[in-house]
Length: 95
Image (tube, rainbow, N blue to C red; front, side, top):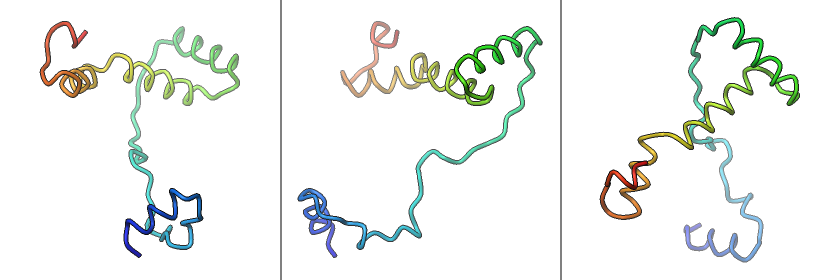
């Protein structure tokens, strides 16, 4: 099946699953790497209280907070967005 035929089926709301080879399917950015970080006891206690309040594990809380901070504050993402949006990076659009 050609890609254009596949796209047409999908766009028309028909099922494309019979044509998809799920044995080769992967999810991007899902490879993990174990990292050990030492936190002061007061910080671990604060993380545990917040995680318990939200009903999630400490690990899940740390992952979400770090992902949110990286998405919001990442220098490389700001630079990428600035370059993509304006064609050049300036001090104002990298803040």
